[in-house]
Image (tube, rainbow over all chains, first blue to last red; front, side, top):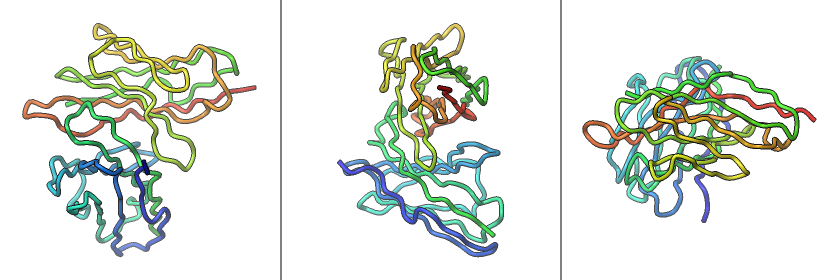
Length: 114
Length: 117
């Protein structure tokens, strides 16, 4: 079974721009979660989608948004980029049946904001 | 709300020595606990998880962890370290919220494991 894939793997943007990251979950998984990883703040939960509905959201500003499509693929968008948005963005997929589910992580998208 | 504390941001051991990575959690409801490993420039890989079936959990690559409710701990151990174990390790908690599952992992800050030859 193919793992979680994320595209692109690397991105360089400038302040004020917007960016869209993509995540394809493991086949059959209906839940996709997004996390931001930075050296200072560590791993922080952004949001989780299940069957195209956002079920949970972390404590991030409204510039961070996401969506999920009917095939479970997900995208996250960051508008009006700030230097502090530079991070590794990780996507994880699971069956979405409960908090005990294993979340399988993709390799991440490394975003650099200049 | 849940939180995780990993004691020691950096642990260094010799090859063949015991590995002990500490994790303490806080949760107002029974927790589910996970250990993940991250190699450079990669995502996170699950080592093991506790979902209340057994307090001693065995994972991949010879790792195991014991859930101790009285100590609110879930420390990760491996009897004999190998060079390939050098990586960053994250403890995470997930919990059944009062309104149902919250479907998110709350991570500790991570522990970087160095293995010396």
